Amino acid sequence: MQFRIVSESTFEGRNLVAPVPVVRRVLDFAELADRSPARLGPIFTACLEEFLSVLEANGGGGEDSPNYSAPDFRDDETFRIGHVVAAIALALQRAAGAEVSYAAFDGGADGTPGHQEIAYEHRGGEFGAGAGRIAIVAVIELLKNLNTSEDAEPLVQVSADYARQLVSAIRARWLDMTTAALVREAVKRGIPWRRVSPEARFVQLGQGCHQKIIHESVIHRTPSDSAWMSRNKAVTNRLLAEVGLPVAR
Image 1 (cartoon, rainbow, N blue to C red):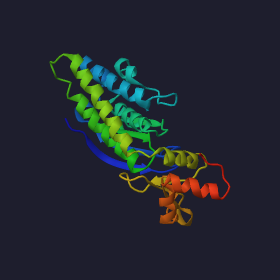
Image 2 (spheres, helix red, strand yellow; image 1 turned 90 degrees about the vertical axis):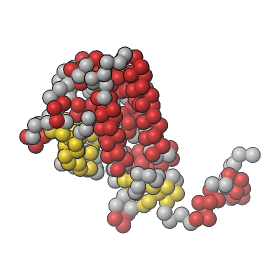
Image 3 (cartoon, one colour; image 1 turned 30 degrees about the vertical axis):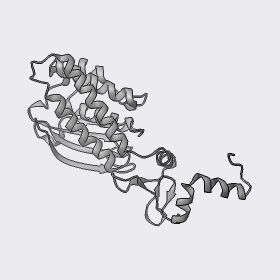
Image 4 (cartoon, helix red, strand yellow; image 1 turned 180 degrees about the vertical axis):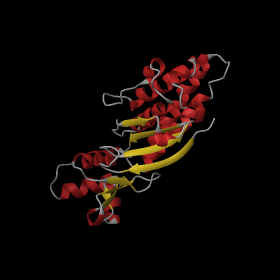
């Protein structure tokens, strides 16, 4: 089963779409567009509930999560597949350490049958957009259980293992603790930021002549010898002690 991404846009900072940075996508769900997750069968809902529960247990939940969670998709028939994609995209980012919660849904996107528009908060530009693409693939994988005649229990376990694999993979691509802390403070101060590359932990803070590119706690103007010395604990300890600063003995 395949879904089609009709259009995709990434918005940084406050914008005309939402008060927070968001990824907006129009998705073509074809014949599944009008069906709620609750009406896709007990095996699918059991697998989806377990999948989301694993994400939430790994940091994908929280007080600021959207107003829908794993049990809601089983009980509430007003939800659509687009809601599921947005929920997974947010949960994956939260599991990686990003503080995101905003999501919006439009079931009548552009007036075309089968199209749904979702918008979800992101942190890190391409990282957030990538989380949404992973969410689409995850939903496709879960939907493979729609017409199966197998026992539900092993399929539920497979869904849980799949969720754990995604958490491990996306955490490996998120920011290290130092850079993430700097980014959180930048957000609090209204400083725009973006990941220079989704594969590397380089982050740009600010824009134009005020921009700074950092890697962990090192900015692009830090001399290379200083960077190497800071990574050597013995050298750093001795240099700090020589200028009278307290150090470990």
